[in-house]
Image (cartoon, rainbow, N blue to C red; front, side, top):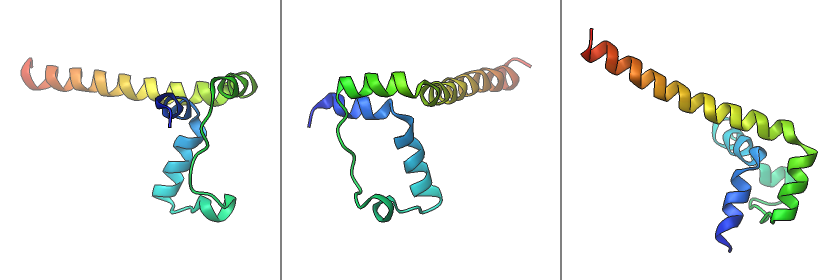
Amino acid sequence: MEPFNCFFISLFPIVFWREILNIKKNVKFKKLYGKEFYYPVDENQLNEMLLRYPKFFYIQYIIYFSSIFFILFGGIAYVQEKFFS
């Protein structure tokens, strides 16, 4: 397995939501698709997905950056409230 396959898969947001559904709602994708593993994605396929479905990627990165900002500013607010008030 190439180390970049995992990186390319992580850029595809459906994998993330699929795992969330699997963990939270116990949705078994093996029944739906007959498989429980991921296919490696090469660079050409990733570029095609980026051009074809850009909104999925934008939504994923909005969620990531919002989470990072929430944790960062929440931590700053906590430290400021705890130690400087």
